[in-house]
Length: 192
Image 1 (tube, rainbow, N blue to C red):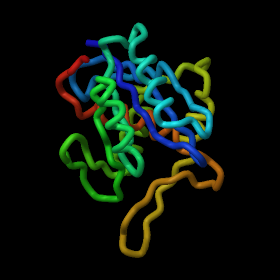
Image 2: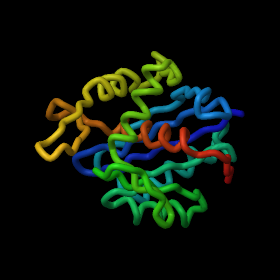
Image 3: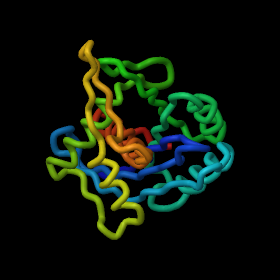
């Protein structure tokens, strides 16, 4: 079984809107392997209607056409953008990134701790089940973002995950992490 999952992390003014496309092979969680097929940052200031148009055009091209799931960051401005994507027939799956302790299904999507997203991606990378082509545009930036993630634990024992250097973005990591997290949890394929 091979299919694609497009992760979309929304930004606009200070942070980029980023997308990552994973190709997933394997039927069980334990043997699923992922190839990072596309990384993209849209220019700062790109409007959300333009983001929706771009994502729709990408999803209508081969090899994604009819074989791709769309997973979108629903945090902040995400819900209205998800509505726009839904109006275009793209059937987005929303993930609200939380500081909680467990993932839960809520309405049209999930509430997922940032820790779960990042850890899923790190485990896949460290186990060799996530492959990133060296010649993929932005691959070096993605790898740097992943390496720059750190865990902070406050006095109450709560953890937070973020880039450890100021000025380092995490948009590509989050886009790919959204796709990887859903890819590891989703059991049945639901093509468009």
